Length: 195
Image 1: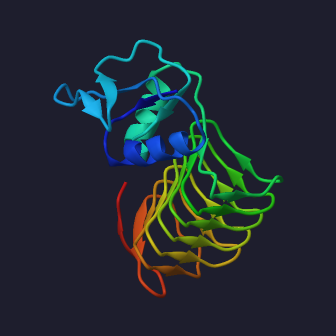
Image 2: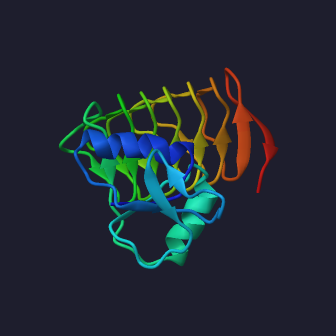
């Protein structure tokens, strides 16, 4: 297994792969000053390494890299995560320690379901979404491409979050949120457009 990106997010993915007994061959990173991460070699040019996980937390950069390179993208799911057999997790996605993905939830490609996050039944998480630590998505929530649900947020049942929006940490979302906005608070309110 290879990782593209050698920062904090990669360190957690390394832990996940190690916990699953998956051998890590090395990492790729554009920063020439990084030559090693947790004892694994870091190269600075992508030359078709596969299987591969893009280990970068920024949703926009993860999408840019996924669209730029051709690779056999893998998933990484920590053994302490609880994934329903009726759920699906797309290529390139990672599910961190203690996360829960319930029945008929659909996780898109290159998503991050972070530490202790909860994605309940029939949620749809589109590509490049980041559900941060201890965020809770109740049943039938739909999160649009590239959106970021920050730590500790709660999305109530049936809510739709638009594409490339940000839900601030600790927010409680009880109404649909459109594309390209920053929304925060309890009850969550739109603060500004970000696209």
